[in-house]
Length: 133
Image (cartoon, rainbow, N blue to C red):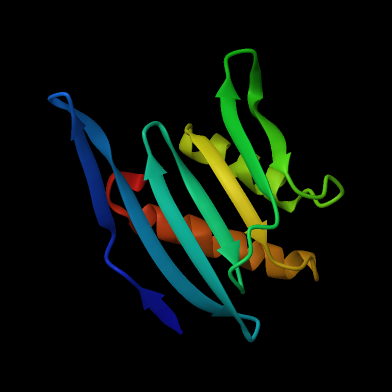
């Protein structure tokens, strides 16, 4: 089951200067009988992605391209360092989009097939969004 909401744009003007809009996009998908929710916020030069089945921010990773390496730099900002899901996903999305990516992956690590299906769904949605985030 797919639950899509139209992206919402938010922008602000301060001292006559218009700041780039933040676009918010939410969608849900049932993957292997589990309801997964996705929240994407387009930021200036990148985006924030939250993935979870309940409203918890259990970790946060950030990744960005580097002129010194073909693989984007990535670090865990908060959360359990033994769980590399957020870090790895942020790095792969940064490489694909060439943007700075923040990821919170708040799903249990049950099996690799589940994680691959979640990532595939994220990439499909990003391709459908205007401006490809």
